[in-house]
Amino acid sequence: MLSVIDVAKKDWKLKGRKPVRHKKIRGLIERLTTPLGVATDLSSAFLETATFGPWNLLIVDKSPLGMEINNDGGDTIAFPTLRGLLEWKPTLRWCEVDRGAIPFLMNGADCMAAGIHASSLEIKSGDMIWIRDQEHGKPLAIGWAMMDSSEMNAATKGKAVKMVHHIGDELWELEL
Image 1 (tube, rainbow, N blue to C red):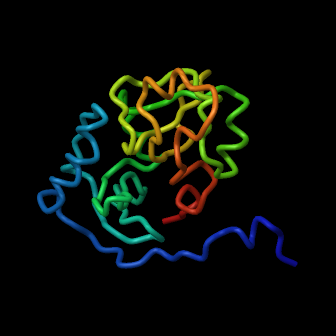
Image 2: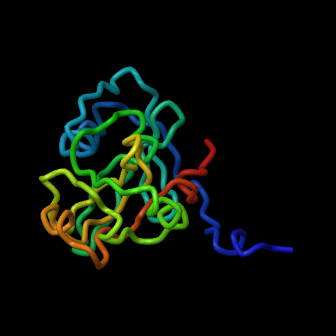
């Protein structure tokens, strides 16, 4: 018998997985790391690209660390996956939520402004950002900012971040 969780899971498969040279994707790596203040050297890593659901993935040493996804305007945005955030420890484009918001985020709910206690100052509406827990600073989710950081910090109601990827979703559970 299928549970509700089994029915909700997408039946995506990893497609088009192929090795790539560092120099061929140097631009992608810069787009992934520079906006977040990350310095990393992937020149000696085994790099692959693949498609998984709506994401084009950058796989580094058999771990999906980067993704490309289209925004509402049709532009392709590069951003680390949650595993990439854990690996590279960025210092920019984050918002911080309290303990009460975490169970909702883990179920894939959008992040509401009431749960946000702080955010980095460079966030503009429409940016892809990452959500971390207030207590430990660990990444919990990734999504599109629906407000600028000043609005996010001041608001007490409304949707602040539209969810894209969270701990426990299909991309997080992807085994390579």
